[in-house]
Length: 414
Image (tube, rainbow, N blue to C red):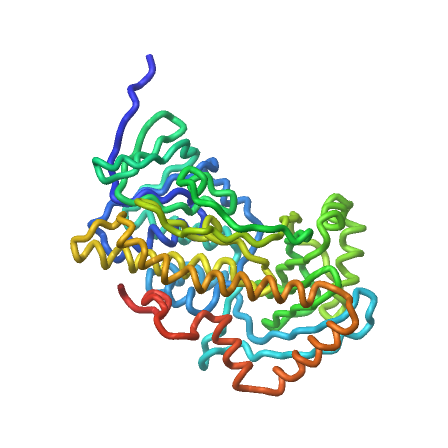
């Protein structure tokens, strides 16, 4: 005999247990323990442990994670980016002149970013969520999220037939967000005809914490330092070429990889699997509707050329948490449009600006047009000779520039 379906009530439902969804849940619960928070995710239990990718966590995000009691569990896995170089060349070039260099510290002893394996990041976030009393449920798909206006909630229907009601639903379910579609929120998007190949390599010589971004005709080729003589690669190619390379055997793939990676770190070998992800720009037309807010890739998907996708998501988490917690303390309705509008106005312009910036950079650098190459190389060289401008760019990458950043990103309590 089947069990009757249940109807539970929470203050907040987060759809999606990736790092942005979990960070949002943890940030809210740590700052306002009286709010009940549940995270619902469609993936099977422990599916996150199979993620072999790594992410760059900017200094501002590190400060937030430290304040939330998470960074201590990550520090042993985190590799600081101590400096960075930028080149502009072709695949067959024997020598790749360095046009731009960056010192890796935003303040003494504080790198502008760390590289952290994704599974370690999710593990630390899940552990902290559990400690705080956040309810995390795996293997359940959200099939509907309709607003019940008379009750002041959204009713979230789960794939097992149960229902959860909440004053606020947070859509953190990725680029192809089902919750966004259920709310009727439209997007502006286009594809670049490129895919990002993500893999990890092991090399003979130490990288000494150096990150490299090589602008090649098909797109940027980024080498990002990991622990134990390993590097994470984000390798942009035309989509058809990326699919071909991922399908090749290891010998052919490593040969093509070596042409781009070079021999500066000695012999290289694959240290994990490889996958290709189609690249494009996606921006939600609205970040909020009544009783729903979008965060992370559900709100925006940008080109990885600047390595800011995850950090935009952490900014969303910090801004939404501050909006919700402060409204709750004032006795306001945390799911009302009037409250959520503050979050939208806080995050939408910054996101649009970053989306446009990465779009322009990708179009400028992902080609082999001689006049454009000359212009961009002169531009890179000029920036390299202007210490104040370089310092500004590093602070931007670290998420520490500008006034009005959410308190958590400054390492402060809400």
